[in-house]
Length: 301
Image (cartoon, rainbow, N blue to C red):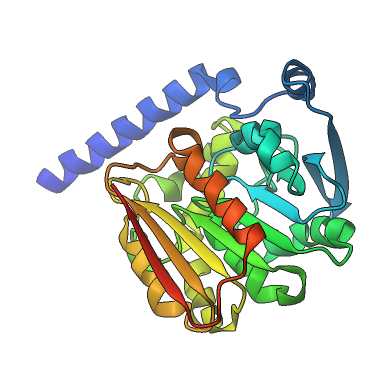
């Protein structure tokens, strides 16, 4: 009897969630239009360029700004999200003077095949590889990944070590053991019928989050292949990505120089709430290379 009631409540809850999602379909895109992006940079008096390329039938949209002769700094958003998550960093004059800054829509988000998510982190890494090749030009390349963007940039460093010189993992979901074994509502929402009732951003997000745990498990034997410097930024009040993910990085990044930045009162939304931490991490990454085997702990209260 109790099981029947619980099952009924779950169904009712799922229907309510779907109804709300459908009602707010148009305002749950988590993206800025190309015109809004242009207007943003016009107001900020920053010369920025929107561009795109096609990789394995995926059209990838991105924005670049800054010193084209300097290092490449690539920002990769979480789930759901879009390149707009990091757009403010491309208007930061102190960063613009230090390198070429790019923020990109990941596959399935923004204007990169909107709504058609890619579950495989390995495939996402391969789709973004041409962006690195196009702009590498023998320059240092630093990747910044927030939330699900964290394990993605790690996967890129595992698969393409010759293209990447540094990683900044911000509140990254990297430990498979910290991913829930089963989030009951994600399975039905991943079915062909119900998935198409979701707003496209949430459809793409559910597709990749539903498969994230096995994707992280595939990466377990590959962490030791990362040799470039890594900075891990993590809030201790993060209710979406447990702070213990940083301990996973400490345990598995055995061949990389790693720096940990913790903040006791910080939640998951670091790019917006604590942009100074990301800014300072980029500056440190670009101005010095951590010695091999060095691990630093910066405790910020």
